[in-house]
Length: 158
Image (cartoon, rainbow, N blue to C red; front, side, top):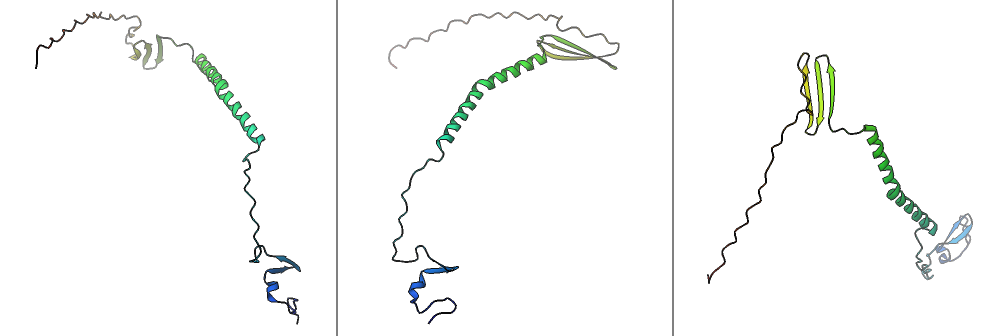
């Protein structure tokens, strides 16, 4: 007797148990049959993570970066330092800047003792020039230390 839906006749159920139909094509399900031996997995083969071309390219790029950082960057930094120093101008040890305002004069003096700012109103006398004023420095005399007295030598028993 034939099944009108599936198109099967009187076939044993075990024959169709591990098979499926898809658009009229029969395909076996993998691993569905318990007696069928499972295929052994292929042995593990260690493969390189990157190809030799990629590793060679990374090596060349690393060498190029090293050369730039060790040789070219210090030259650029030195050139920038020279350009900044030339832009600022020579450093003068003793400088004096006078600024006239409507309320008086502001004098900024830079000397070996630091920076001083003097303000004077209109009609006041000008402050003395700190570079022209010489402050005497007292002379310090250093005497050599006296030799230390040696402790007495131990005598006898304690």
